[in-house]
Length: 65
Image: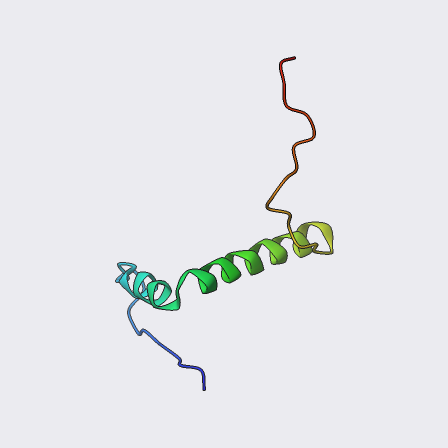
């Protein structure tokens, strides 16, 4: 079962502690996956489709010009 966490405050009273605590509890993998989902959503909005972003590039030539 998934755990749900809520915070009730007035607008303007938020100091950001709730968000920081929430994401620290989630761990690195969850933070990375959430960021990847936001990138994919952005691509869908801008391009109409989303490919998985390539985070690693291959260097084909390295030397002096």
